[in-house]
Length: 260
Image (cartoon, rainbow, N blue to C red; front, side, top):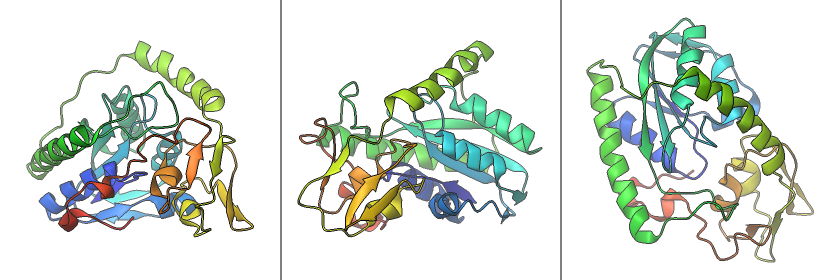
């Protein structure tokens, strides 16, 4: 079974491509994460866990969920990460989680996808040509990973040194605490109060007040709200007004689009 969390469609596309190639099921974990539902997930086939990379590691809320949820049936676990450049220490953290669950870690791979983090000027966005190229190469990479899983092969990734984890883990926690405020989020008059942002927020941090979203903390900066808004009414400070609010569904061929 392929388990995944996806904010702007990148990981969803990779996960469903893998599931289709395997002839297996895919399960979006967003609703379970929102409801704190850690009940058993059973699969008689290997688990393939897919998630994005935030600041060199898996999203903290996603790691917390995978640690707590009960996985039953097949004991083999693969991890697939989607990112703009590299997976950082994600593979090393995944390995530790799987071992602590007394399951068999089958390795990890990362798939380079279009950049989707637009709440900072430190990160360059992708143009249309680059987005289409990355989506096409991502599909091929996902299919290749699926073939390895089907043949029960180990996914090979670089070794994560202990020193990397020792430095990165506290830095990420500091970054999340100090560099990811939710207060700059705001809406324009284009907001129709549809509640899509409330639905897609994995941390339940958005509520509608007088048909307008209000953001609370902590915020994962996953970009689900700003990039999923059907009227593009959401912005972050003065940073995002002239940026592409990327969602994979805007670029995928019609036959591959999935409502999210």
